[in-house]
Each structure stands twice: as C-alpha cells, then as structure tokens.
Amino acid sequence: MIDDILGEWDLILGENGRGEWDGRIVFRLGEGRIVVADADPDASGRPSRVELAGDTVRFEMLSAGSSRGNVHHTFELTLTPDGTLRGTRRRGLLARTPLVGRRVVAETGAQAPEALGGDTHAASVPPESDALAEIRARAAAAAERARFAAAQAAAAAAEAEAAEALEFARQAAARVAAARAAVNELGRPADAAAEPRTEVPSEVLAILPAPSQPPVFAPAPGAAAPTAPVAPVSPAPVSPALLSPGEHAPASVLDDSSAAEGHEPEDSDEEFSGSLAG
Image 1 (tube, rainbow, N blue to C red):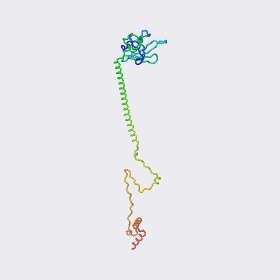
Image 2: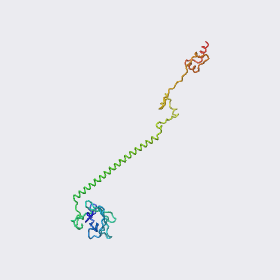
Image 3: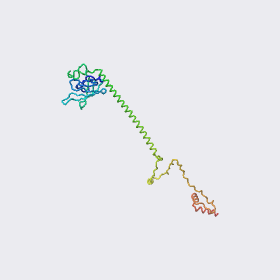
Image 4: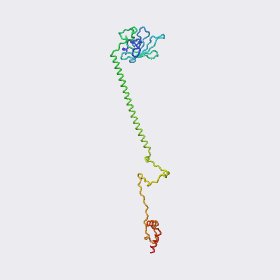
C-alpha cells in the first residue's frame, strides 16, 4: 500500500475527476513513516502524518487561506483498482467535497498544470486505455450479477419463511378445531339428541276439529306393543225352565236374555209361573 501511493498526485474536484484542479500533493517517507505535503515548494505548511487503514489514507493539511489565516482541510482517500485515489475533502466544519487523485506521470515533469496552459489536468492525466475500460465494464457487470443473485437469495428465503408460517398456522387451526370438538362432546348432555316434547295448550285443542279416526301413537323405542282392547264377556243366558223352584236368574242374565229374545221381563215371569203350576 505504501509503495502504491508514494509520489505526486493531482487532486481534482468531482466524483468523476472532471472538475477543477485542487492542487498537487506528494507522499514520501520521512523518519520511518509516510507523510504528505504540498508539492509546491513555495507553499507554506509542514508535512502531515498519514494514517493508513487498509486501502484508505487519512490526513490533514493546512493551506494558504484568506487574511484570517490558513485553511484546515481533512482528506479521506481510498486507493481504487484503476490506480486512482477517490474520496472526500472537508474544509473546516463544512460539508464533504468529493475529489479524485491521479498520479502525476513522470514524462510531465514537475511542472504545475497552470504553467502548461489549456486543460488544468490534461498534462498529468494519461488517457484511459481500452483495456482499463473493459475491466471497468466487467467489474460493473459482475457487481450487477452479484446484486441480482443476492436479491434472488433474499426472495427465496422470504418465500420459504412464508411457507413455514402458513404451515404453522394450518397446524394451529387444526389443533383449535380438535379442541373445540372435544369441548362440545364433553359439554353435551346424555339426552341432548332427544328433542323435548312440547305441550299443546288446551285453548288450541278446543279450536281444533275432532279427528275422524282415533289417533294412533307409535310405540316408543323399546316399549311393548299395545294390546287390542278386550270386550267384556257377558254371562250366557239361562233358560227359566232350567231353574229350580224358588231360584231366580241374575238380573244381568235376565236383562240380556230378554233383550236377545225381544220380550219384556214381566212376560218371562208369567210364563215361568205357568210352567210351575202345570
């Protein structure tokens, strides 16, 4: 890293290195460490110590300012693969200004760009080769592919996470449904399946027409089948001729026999008395 930055560099304002020329600095070794100073011998200021952090260099410089004194600048530059220093310059507490540092080509000598006239940095900036442009294009394409691959990986991870969440929700819903079914089964009474019998008010029964046929009720499950009503058995009629003297037939027998023969009870007594007298 130290060998890569040693030498003179032109500082140009702007992110693309097409802005105004901001000066020339030189990196050199002094007392076993790397320092930076203004390349102009007439410029006031002492060399500043450079802090290295990987490919990034940080340093502070005092340059000639206005009547109020010197201007304090803080630089933070990074060595890029294309051989340039890119970073920012901060003046005092103001905002950072982007700039680009380009190495001074040996053929240009130590002349300052102002003395060459014309473009302020054309003499010190070598033209960009086709190979370098191709390298930059490939690097940009590789970076784009890397970003696309990272986006695809993030989308796949999000999709897998969503599928896992849906499966977890489905299992939770199934458990809730099973728990509800168990609670309903435990809380149902034994005779919940049988519908309660509704009593019909007497007022409703009074206005209903009489049925032409007696209602037939279906026997309850498990109950014995109803038996047909048994007609009362009347005793067989007894003829008065078969009775002993002084014996009388039961009234029900006399009534039934009289009704069956179509005679009055008084006639039967007269006939019975006549038979006894004969």
